[in-house]
Each structure stands twice: as structure tokens, then as C-alpha cells.
Amino acid sequence: MNVTITPSSLQGTAQAPPSKSYTHRAILAAGYAGQTTVRDALWSADTQATARAVDLFGGAVSRADDGTLEIEGFDGQPDVPADVINCDNSGTTMRLVTAAAALADGTTVLTGDESLRSRPQGPLLEAVADLGGEAKSTRGNGQAPLVVTGPIAGGEVAIPGDVSSQYITALLMAGAATDDGIDVVLETELKSAPYVDITLEVLEAFGVDAHQTADGFSVEGGQSYDPVGGEYAVPGDFSSISYPLAAGAIASEDGIRIEGANPSAQGDTAIVDIVDRMGADVDWDREAGTIDVSSASLSGIEVSVEDTPDLLPTIATLGAVADGDTHITNAEHVRYKETDRVSAMAEELGTMGVATTEEHDSLTIHGSESTLEGATVSGRADHRIIMALALAGLVADGETTVEGADHVDVSFPGFFDLLEELGCSLERQS
Image: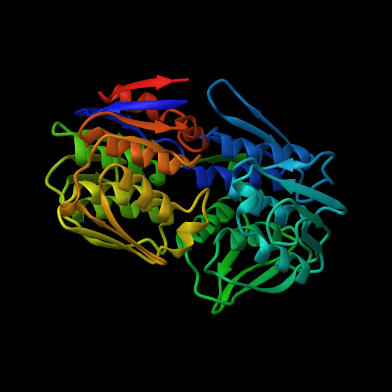
């Protein structure tokens, strides 16, 4: 599906979608548990991939009409799957499930779509091998398809922290179900640290003790996943909130109110401060969980995305509208997502007349040297690129067509419906 957007002025109320990061972890944590009710879960292409993995490990995930998930877990001991686990486009699923597969007494095969089969998994495979399992890339390049054989008993393992925080999350979640637990020693500085904080928060909610150490993280073995009252509620997603928030900052004189914006461990809450620093009129009532935002003249700023890689596309679009330069730093790890998001935003915004400077670890948007013009742009089969380019279309001169827009289903299935509800003029083409 392609979507064509005509410049529009937005106003109204937006409900924050549930957090994808929390939902992934909650579904798998419920898989490690017995019987769990997960409320307010995001049911997207990515999180459904994690649910299918739980099913293949011997659990059962069912979804009620109100979106509530009832999950019968495998009690910390996954079965050997009867079929290949297809993670589709979900990197989180592949990393978390790779470690879970290492607990099974047998061999698990994992694969995904073309994009996912190009993403790095090598450090996690090496970690599983160091813990006594077998883990290989069928092509010998550290990328899926993967073959994982367990069980592992636990122990100490060293792993880089600057490739993906999901490696640490995967090992901590699986480590609680091992006999000996897992001590993770970081070989390099941890990037995307708030995502590990999310993991620790979810583990605590499920009754699992894991903690940071002087040189990494540790989780004791022999623990049971047991959420209080057998329930867990997923908070709103600030990665997704970034899009209506940015839309309000660039295209809403009358303001947008975002509901469901409750404080949590998510690093992407930083987007509220970023929009405020750039000059938008924004007010976050943390107690009520609401954000009110309206547009104003924006100015470029310097922003590190070391801990918030998913925000780079949104910040890049804000920079295209702002005066002066917006300098996005510490961005190397953003190149290893569904696509190379640094190059993707530079190239697609360039198609729209935006001047950028791309370096290995940074992206600078030269707002004052740019004229944002409508164009046909590629969404690169990446949900975050698609949504960021759609925002640019709200204020570009002329129509903007985003190709492959259906990939928003990965994290924000109702994104274009929401834009229409807020007053955006858009047309879908099959």
C-alpha cells in the first residue's frame, strides 16, 4: 500500500498505542510463567511473531475481543519446536527467542524476512555457545537462519554492549530459568541502556530478580516467573508517541492532546524534552498521563540517540522543519535496524529537498538550507521511516507519496487512521 499525504493542519486527541518493547517482553515472560493475563498489549506484526514463538515452545496465546491476551506458559522449560520459528521482521523476537531456544533440550531453527536475515546476531550466538549450548548461523555470517541447540545451564558470559541491548535482555530473561543463572559481563559500553531498564522492570513485575553489577548484569537461576495476581498491564509506547507529538509540533496550531503517556523506564520519553528544546509548545502532565502540544517556530539542536535509537527518524523530520542545523549524534547502532535508518532518512529527506550531512556516527539536518517539497519516497519496508516521512508530508509543499506504507503494522497499525482522525488529508492506494 502507498499513502499520499496533502499538507494538513491537525488538531484533536490521540491515544498512545501500547508499548511494543514492553509487549514483547510481557508475552515472552508470560511464556516463561504458568498462566498470565496480559492487558493493553500491542497486537502488531512484531508482537504476534513473539506470540507464535511462545506457541511453538509449548505455550498458548489467545486474544480476547477487547485485546486482552490470555497466555498459558511453558513454565520455564520450552519444548523443542515442531516447526521453524519465523520471526518475520522482528529483531526483538529473534534475539529474545534465540536465548529461550537455548533452554530447550534439542534443536530450534529460527529465520525471518530478508531484512531480518541481514541483521547481526553473532554476539548472541557466541554467548549461547560460551554458556554450553550450540548456536550457529547457517550461512556462517552471524545472520539468520539460526540453528540453536540446548539446554544451557547458565554461567558467566562476555558480550559487547554497543551492538544491541536486546542481547542482554535475551540472556537475562532466559537466565532466570537456568540452573545456575547468568552473569553478563559487558565488553564495551552499553548503548540503548533504557531498553535493559525496561527488561529489569518487566522481570520485577513477573517476580524475577535481576540487577546491574559493576561490569554488567546478573540474574540468579532457578527462579519462577509469577506476576502479582497473574496479570500484567502494558504501558503506552513513547516510540510511537513520538509521531503524534512531532505532528503537533510541526502541524497543529490548535494543539493535539496525547493520552496514555504515563511515565515509565522507556528512554524514548526523551522525545518530550527534545520537542520542547526545539521550541514547540508542549506540556506533559505526568500524573494524568497526558501531553498537550502545538506548533511553533522550531530551532535545530544537538541530540544524542545513544540510548534512544528509535527516535532518529522522528528527530530528522523535526530537523527538516526547524531553522538551523539539527545534529543527531551517537547514531552508529541506528544503522542496524530494519534498515540503515541513518542513510534512509538522509536519502529520502534529500528526495524531498532537505540538505543533510551523513557521517558514520551522526546525521545533520540543515533546516535553513532546505525547502521541504512533496515527492514520492520509499518507506524502505521500515515502520519508523514510513511514519517519519508521513510527518514530513504534513508540511511539505505539494503532495507526498510514501511507498510501502502498510509496514506501519509492525508497531502502529492504526497510524494512518489516527492521522485522518486528527484532520490529515490522505489517500491510500493498493
